[in-house]
Image (cartoon, rainbow, N blue to C red; front, side):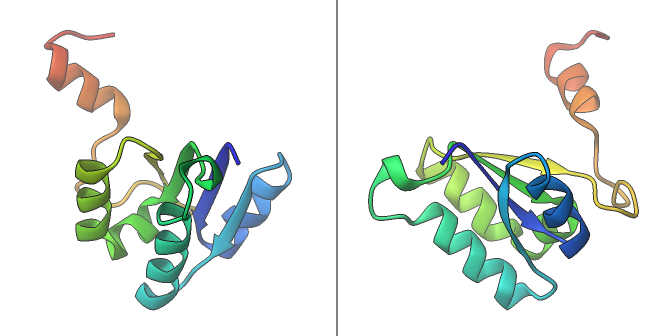
Length: 105
């Protein structure tokens, strides 16, 4: 599996239209179950290469996402804005790159 999406029902539907499987979540328990399933596959070859989380889903799983990023190299975890746009206080990927390298792209 290359990609997997966890987020709101409408976004899961949108991603499925381009061939990306996913799980719709609305509570922390649902988000945690989907995250554990996607990141704890028994064999690394069964894990998605890229795990896409909506910002709303990622905000429910902040500690788990950081722990996973520190523990494993796969999957790459990417956050995308939800239907309501970017969450308050979240920086865009461009902003993060600008801060990291110190120049505008």
